[in-house]
Image (cartoon, rainbow, N blue to C red; front, side):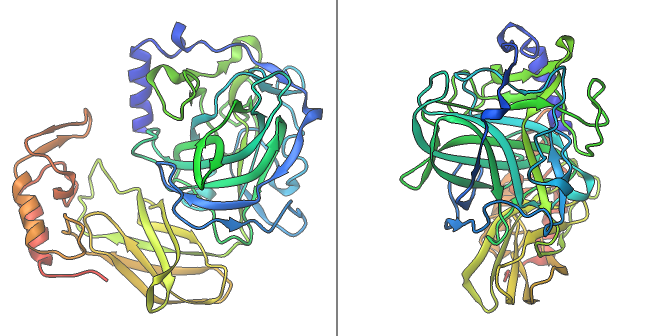
Length: 450
């Protein structure tokens, strides 16, 4: 979490963490008896700019049968027991008294970003069950009122920079909802879609809005995901058995709430001095281990083994075998330290082509992957380096880009480039464009991708 630590240091230096500009009101307790259960009706994939990048898919399963599903926790703020899902997930209360902590009906923070440490067994996989509690208040009143479409976007990513580290996410539509306190459930079984998760440590976004004219927009009125005590072995005041965790630091979009993050919207949610403990967004991410996946290893050739800029995500496209225009799924997912990748398998059995779509490497595919309803492993792909202009061939255009950036360097620690720096020309990620990059391109010159 080097980037997360760097951002913390910057913000603390500005006096914003714990300073006057970052003070939050004291939490109040929500009446949990007023919670209404709501199930998501449809889901689509979404990119980091909140653009919907797939067709909407109807969510067929409205409520989980815990006797027929084998869940594994990926991240959860309340130390829930996956074997008891869904009915007991938020009936355990941690704190000085029972209750859901929030900041009042008219406190508006529709967009939050946590730092997260995942359950190790969940690294790089896709969450297929999401649960959270939320105040939905289109009428901006107390108690909540009004009626509007409720849509939520979820992302995870590496590090803590919401701009550069995020993976593709999902957007889920709950339909028109009256203002109230809600327990929101998203069960993606039967959709062929999951929420891609990072490896190890990273970040989690939750954004609450509406779908208008097919686009995700800022929520009308006010809205907020609830906050609860973070319960994990590392939380001194309320330790739990939860193998996932987070710290007290979180981005809250409240100044104003506009789906953008400003420096003075980085807050500490450490309320240990008032016997409340460390608070985190009430969100549970769970993996249905019975949902089949396609996994393997993607090798990106010629990266410096000591690079400070490892590749941590990659676009994976699954198509009908022999028909590249019939795309089954297209998403950016985590790439593990040894090139591991994992995507949710297609809904239907058949033969598929699995494409790795990197940046300055050629696109390569594993062709004719046979899927018959069970998870497929060992799908291995190796991509040649040198396609700096991303036209899927290594040719004179790539030579020109490397020549233009030759001699430039990049200081990873400070983020400072020197000379005509171009990330796409630094083929081996050693933070300088030199003869080594020429050698890689020359060895692969003339190659074209799949």
